Length: 75
Image (cartoon, rainbow, N blue to C red; front, side, top):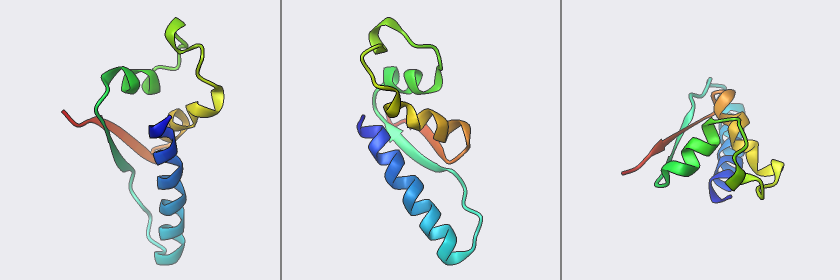
C-alpha cells in the first residue's frame, strides 16, 4: 500500500512537471525492497495471499502497464 501511495504522488508530480515544462517525461523509477510485492504488482493473477487487498490498491499495476512507473528491487 505504501508503494501505491508513492505511485499516486509520482503520477501527480510527473503530470504537473510535464505541464509546467512542456517536456515529455520518462517513466519514474520506484525502488522496492520486497520481491513478493514486485511480483504481485507485475502479475495480474490474484493469488490466495492477495485476496484481502482492495482493488483500488492495484492502481500501481496500471501505472506500470502505461509506462509511467518502473518498479525495481533495491537490494
